Image (cartoon, rainbow, N blue to C red; front, side, top):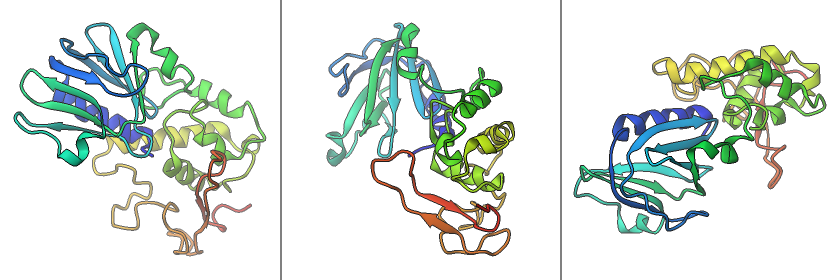
Length: 264
């Protein structure tokens, strides 16, 4: 599942390619607004909140999408289209006045809401370090509300802090020296939030450092623990351990940790 920094970068790419473009024809093909026309609108803005993308039009409507595991956006040049095998996966189509087409493919979450009503689709989300309205104190308060929750589960709860996926939740636990299942009430929550926010921001602002937590971009050495089960810890040499995801349980995602650097 894309993390908040992935969606932030996606919005930047779409903004560079399509901001201000007029939609000559297009439609929503899934979700509650399936069949709604997008023709005649101008793309006014791309915004994000955590892992959610908001495409705003000058008509006063906002297209809300979430990629989950499989969704993607692509743009084809004038005179080009998607391969036939991909056509049935299209959930959003926007042919622009210049002939290019913006496609939302295999998008599991698609909503079309009035722009003033965006809170109906993203209002449940916690503060996002990549937004201009980032509120560190609010994030600390939300994460601290239930001190019994495992720290890794709390970090993954988008209602508390928006934008962290499994990669960042695990890497932040390592960077703070925390056993992932330690109750969050027993940790330095302000420090935890500071590390998480710094990581997400560095990922989108430091050239070449996208989702790199070690500072080393060599293959297999970009992350301290994620994807390194059984391999030696880059800090102490202890084999990294991993616990499998429990299907259907959002509290039990696949988790990696170093038993020495993150003692129980």
